[in-house]
Length: 157
Image (cartoon, rainbow, N blue to C red; front, side, top):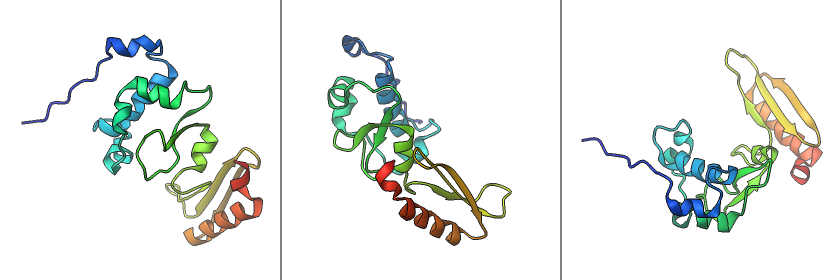
């Protein structure tokens, strides 16, 4: 017999804070969905990879008390990608801050579909966009490390 998933419905207490369906509420709700809804497109990268939400953040009021109202232009980010969502591991961050906090760090190295060369790509507020292609992944990764060191990127973004 299939396991029945209880649909999460807003409670009257959630509306007391006046932020129901606000950007802050959507950040909180989407965090929970990514971690616990197996049919969500991002579940494999979050809940499926073992990412959880601390027990006290089941309640929106506690989340709001810990994080405050979401600042404009920022979204919820885990500081340490190996730890769960919680007050000691989350912040409101810009898209650039989140990009630089990815598991691969600032910049990325990838092989695009139907491509024969590896591409290094970075989008920095200070240095703008930078793309360069290499015949091997090792060369692209070495260039990435040298680029970050040369421009001291960690200091800026």
